[in-house]
Length: 249
Image (cartoon, rainbow, N blue to C red):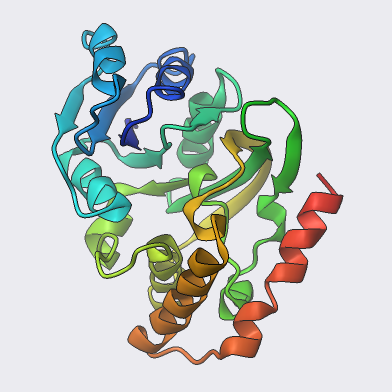
């Protein structure tokens, strides 16, 4: 069973090398590595070039946003399982893909494996939040709470069955995708206590009050588009869960 690892990046000169090294140092070797760059001008491409003999596919072209870039990677992939690791993320250790592979081989009907993401302070190794997969239950999606995207490994057949990421979302395209696959298509999934990814604090959805507002509006819209009921009160209820993760990191 082959794994496709996809990294999307844009002007990531400060972090991309750590991401690449964390992928290429995996003990499990039956994987392909795809990098989708949005047309970087800061030296990112020069760093990627150093690893060109170890990366299966590199595309550098302007895109319409992060979900457009992810979709390009999915469409290029040849693996059975898709992993999406961004340019400021790293795998928790060198055995992550090995653990993921064993889970899918042990349970052939499994369509999605969800692990834990650790969120650290920018330019530091201090862990601020433990985004634990064990918190996730499907009913939580009704309250705007989704599993940790970087530590979610999904079979390519799910994308073929359920569709890829929608491009009319600026921030919450991953939430809409999760809403679709878990609540509309009812795919099979498993959560594990294993830590899979370390990412830096400060994603686009939390960058500002405006970003939070856009994210909440898009989450509410995703329910309407999928004809699933929710409301503002439900969506805002997810914030106490996030706060709890800071306390129990």
